[in-house]
Length: 489
Image (tube, rainbow, N blue to C red; front, side, top):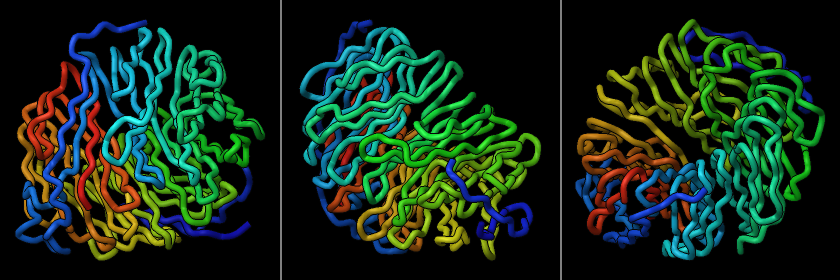
């Protein structure tokens, strides 16, 4: 047993605590379609670290859009995650009702909400797509690409799910499902984890050895193939081998499970995992107890080592609301956490305070969990972040949605009225490189962001109404549609 620090920021210091090791129907349709717009493709932005005349606000020379595509019909289609493989192909997952066509064949939901996964080439053209579902509801929650360009797909479901290797059935309420598909869409394996109680999936990642790490929630006992994780209402984590076999699994209980938000995860260079979420009440990370004040939610960041044992825990917050919404880890094991800030958080030599409603929060931590710096972006309106990623040079990519005005350091960006998508690129020190807004009178939101091997950002999100991504508007067919766009670096 090693003594490791637990940090508490924005409230009070907590003494060093010894951490315990261990292991833990068919829809009808009218306007099914694909809209394909090639953007301006203007390449390298002209702005520097502190902004620049060619790289502020909506300047088209700032991170030109390579292409943007819309997928959906008049029913509801929603993106949940995006990943990029070593060849620059783009993997997108989401949930839909009605029909959705990525260019090869239309997929019709079977009555409830169904689960889709699609692979697009670097040019945005369809490589393959797949859907699964029955009359009940199936939800996609995450996607990752491993070192062999296989797709790792995560979700939770009622009824049955079939990714081509035969159906798996839920045991009662929603169960967790994870599937591995080859680069050519051949099913490799599918695993279901569940009980008669409720289980939910949150996020998936792969480590440098292509092991699969999943995060979720379990209301009762849960078996990932190792020792049964006994208990109720807790966060659950598991690492599976590339063959889908159990390596380790962990459970962290909470006394206010209704106040736990979805978990976001990233693998670190050693094969460990870092996760972020928000919580209220108390959550128990082995020997560490993190506690908020009544009606409070704090942002939580935890690193688990390659065996699943906690290495550090950090809670950020005051008496208001702070949400962990995304996490990325660089090659030196520094951690970048993105979240929503309502109220204040303390970082070294500074207190970051929201301007009114929620603002975007970005914090960089060192490998041991020490806060290196933090940034806040937003005005008195609502700004929310949906994802953070790093490109091959260590630049930071942020995606999200906002109303009002947001300034990442290169000049203010103003929304068109309802929620608009933002995408921003910052250097490793948090300085502005470029920032972009996409939106119209309707609501447009980003679900996730990733970077391809050539450092082109890729964003998946939802489109309601019309938005111009650089070559004329894309317009939803009715309700929300899926939108995928690729930007120049």
